[in-house]
Amino acid sequence: MEFHSHNEAETEAIGARLAAVLNPGAVVAYLGDLGMGKTAFTRGLAAGLGYKGRVTSPTFAIVNEYEGGRLPLFHFDMYRLNSADDLFDIGWEDYLSRGGVCAVEWSENVMDALPEDTVWVRIAREGDTGRSITIKGVELP
Image (tube, rainbow, N blue to C red):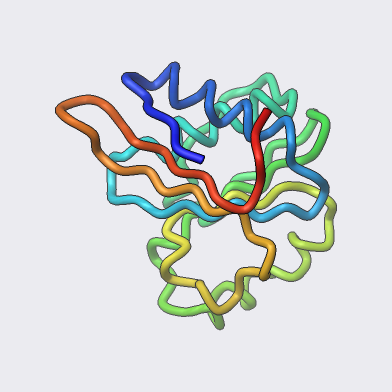
């Protein structure tokens, strides 16, 4: 499914729509260059799961945890990881077993660790400020 966003609010709204269909243990893997709106999409995902707090990029922490919604959200930034082995070193399997949603930025760096039923979200530039957002692996209402 392909969506078109013209600003951060629209990107967040698409993330919220995806949240509505996710089940415990879901992995959402992002594909897209720096500055494409992955964190904005995750803000929408968190809001769609019912999280009310602030959502920020986990670049330096590697993972930020957001609890208090319908499902916990674990937001990963794999930019500084070299391989899937590094991901297992930070407890990836534990996060998968906690019954939340794992949102993974820079998933290209850890492809080997992602489950078969991963939901893929590709965000690409469209014109000067727009974004094309393609979601594969689930159907949105």
